[in-house]
Image (cartoon, rainbow, N blue to C red):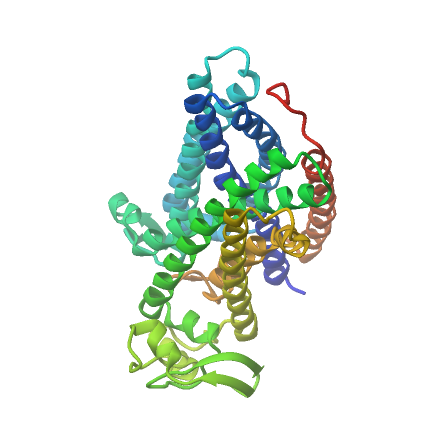
Amino acid sequence: MDVVLLSRLQFGLTTIYHFFFVPLTIGLTLMVAIMETMYVKKKDEHYQQMAKFWGKLLLINFAMGVVTGIVQEFQFGMNWSTYSRFVGDIFGAPLAIEALFAFFLESTFLGIWIFGWEKLKPALHAACMWIVALASCVSAFWILLANSFMQNPVGYVINNGRAEMDSFLALLTNPHLQLQYPHVIAGGWATAGFFVLGISAINLLKGHNNAFFQKSLKFATVFALIGALVSAGVGHAQGQHLIYEQPMKMAAAEALWETEDPAGLALVASIDEEQGKNNFEIVIPKLLSFMVYNSFDGEVRGIHELQAEMEAKYGAGDYVPPVAVCFWSFRVMVGAGGLMIGLALLAIFLTRKGKEVQCKYSLTAMGLGIALPYLANSGGWILAEMGRQPWIVYGLQTVSEGVSVAVSSTEVLISLVGFALIYTILAVVDVYLLAKFGVRNVKTGAEEV
C-alpha cells in the first residue's frame, strides 16, 4: 500500500466521520430556532421544552463535529502538500473565510444561547439560535465553494505551475456550487427531521412522556418530508447537469460501458471492471435518457468512449473511476432517499389520523429510519468524490500528483490507524451520549434544561 492509497484512505475516513455530524448540525439548528420562535410567539412552554431538549442533543453533535473537522485541515498540509501548493491561492480563501467568520460566528452565538436562557429576553435568545443556524449554512457554503472548484474549476489562471484566482465572482457563481449547495442543505434538513422523528418514536415505544414526544414527532415529520423532497429534486437536477460537467462520473454511476441512444437504467448489475463490461444486469429501457434529458430519446456516452476522449485530451492514462463503488453508492443514496420519502409520508398520515402511538411497527420503522439520511449522505459523497477519480482537481491535477512527497507510507499508516481508533472511540461516545440524553423521560414544564 503506497502513500497515495493510504493518504486517500485517511482523508476518506476522516471525511466520512466528520460528515456524520455536519448535516445534523445544519438541520437541527434550524429546527431548534423554529421551536424557540414558536415558544416566543405562542407562549407555549412545550415549545421551550422542545428547544431545550433537542438543543442539548445539538450541542453533543456540534462538539463531535468540531473535533473531527479540525483534523481535516491539517491533512492538506501534511498528506496533500503538493495539492495545497498548486491550489492554495484559490482553496485557501474560502477555508479562511469559513474558519474566521462563519465558524466563529456559529460557535460564539451558540455559547451565548447555552448560557443565556435566564439572562436574555426570549426573543433575543431565540435570535441567537437563528444566527447559529444562518452561520452553519454560511459555513457550509464556503466549504462547498472550495469543493466545487475541485469538481468544476472556474475563475483561475495557471501561472508558474500554480492555479491562481482570476475571478472571485466566477467561484461564487460556479454552476456546480449552485446545485451542490442546496442539495447539501436539504440533506441536512432531512437528517435533522429523521433524527428527531426517530428518537421521538423510540421514546414513544418506551412510553416516555407521550405528549412531548408526540408533539416533537409531528413537528419532525413535516421537516423530514420537506428535506427529503427538496434533496431528491435538487439531486435530480445535479444528475442532469453532471452529464455535461462530468460525463465519466455519470457513466460510472450507471456502469454504462458503451454509448447508448436511448440509454437504459440498470437497476442491478454484476460489474467486471477488468474486462470493462457487465456480466449481468437488469435494465429498464430508455429510463436513463429520460432521467437525463426528460425525453425517452437521447445519447448517453459510455465509459469506453469517454476514456478514449480523455486520453486524446490529457494524454495516456486510466481515467475510469472505480465503477462498482460509484454504481452501488449511487443506488444506496437513491434507495435511502426513496425510503425517506415513503417513511415521512407514512408518519404524516399516522399523525393526521392520531394513530402514531398505536402502531408499534411504524414507530419501530421510524426509529430505524434515523440511519437513512446518513446512508444517503455518505453514498452521495462517496459518489461525488470517487466519481471524479483520478482527478483531485478535475482536469488539472490528478490525485497521485497532489500527494505529499516527503511523507512515507509508514507514517501515513500509523496516523491512519491512530485516527481510526480515535474516531471509533468518539463515535461510541457520541452514540452513548445521544442515547443517554435522548432516550429518556422528559420532565413537564419549562424547567427541563
